[in-house]
Image 1 (cartoon, helix red, strand yellow):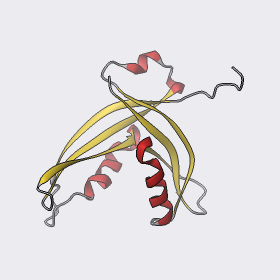
Image 2: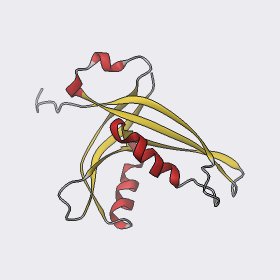
Image 3: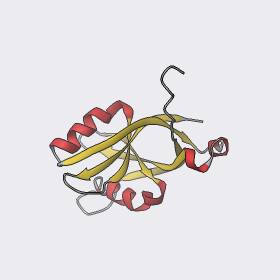
Length: 137
């Protein structure tokens, strides 16, 4: 079973009442947060880190429904003409929005004639809701 440290946060336009949930790898979260705020004008609120586990060994059986969120990993293997090699782009989406968000994600990798130049792989998984431990426990 593989895992990935992800930050769950809400992304919203400044001044908007409601945001959209995003899952971002912990290792790039600071850079992603800066980019969303400075270049795109979004606010990144309520960040919370935890683990994403793939569903290979049915880890959801170990948790009750309110202890996890279903999250789909989408990996695109994209050929770069400039570099003459494949590179991997990986994103995580709330499973109930994955089909719609995957299309937006893949639109960044279309060729000039509108065709997607990539191989795509998806894996279902869960993001574990972590409980805050009481101070002094």
